Amino acid sequence: MTITRTELLSEVLEDIGVLAIGENASAEDNAKVLSKYKFIHAYLQKNDLLPFDDDDPIPEEYVQPLVFATGAAVSMAYGIQSDMNGAIELAEAMIHKINKDYTGVQPTRFDDF
Image (tube, rainbow, N blue to C red):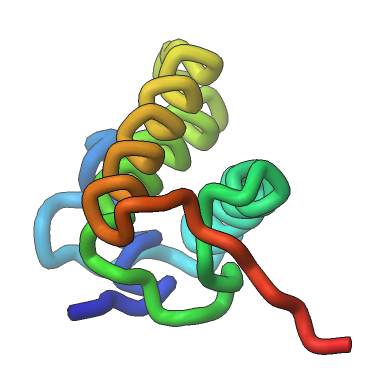
């Protein structure tokens, strides 16, 4: 099962307390979270941790670590203190475990030439 990037952005805003459950995000809120999500995704993908692109549907097993790390990254824009480095380290550890449990090996990406 997967979720869309838009659904992930809403989960991030709900997780940090900016949105109530079921409330719709403003375009400004979505833009803030999207830029942080792209940053987090690029970092994790560069380290061969995510086997999907930033605009692809997100497999459910990756949702929580991405919500956690993206929420830590965007929270400062809302005046909420967070430990971004700690959040990214925890997300990396969670994704390493997901990748190991899911495939038995670390993911390998093959880009089209």
